[in-house]
Image (cartoon, rainbow, N blue to C red; front, side, top):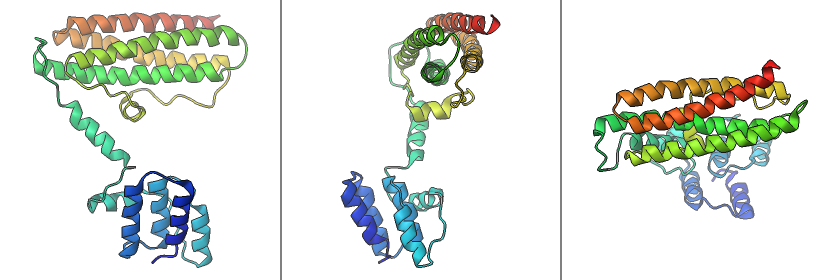
Length: 260
């Protein structure tokens, strides 16, 4: 048995960690000699998500530390061998893509082909609206400088308005038989927005970054108004028109601060 097995067992019991299925899988792999010490160390971080540096130090003393720093090759190996991995992020994304193509039955008279396209459009806009909502709060929490209190309170109101549109967007695509994808993982995969600069603090810097994000979402929403209308869904086009008005109004307030 590899020398890391006992430290692994003690660590698991000490932390009372829940993923017992994964831990038993790990033990089986150790027992049959499938894993060496270094691989065992790397896999422990994949399954359990704790600091494995004590194990790595133990291995390095024996001159057996191989410097494994990524879990992806091990994940690939386990997937090929059909070994269950509750921590594998890829499985969630695959499930989401499969579900995205399936519509639930409904008596809505918009043809299924058109509804499927509208659902895809609305899920894309949903990801961007959730992304925008999150970055508004990021700015609300972290901005510093002149006009702090005014901008701080303004952004709180903006967040509430965007969240209302998030709810409307998700519910509309579900009404059409779709599934709304609103988890953080879904949003990270599906948003078209650039990453928000998380380390900025000046009020002006946040306003500039928010203006760019608002403009990006507004352009996508305006395009989707025409697309959904052409697909025969005047109701979704009308809903998106309301979203567009809110985005343009918020952008106006943000740019007014920058133009002063």
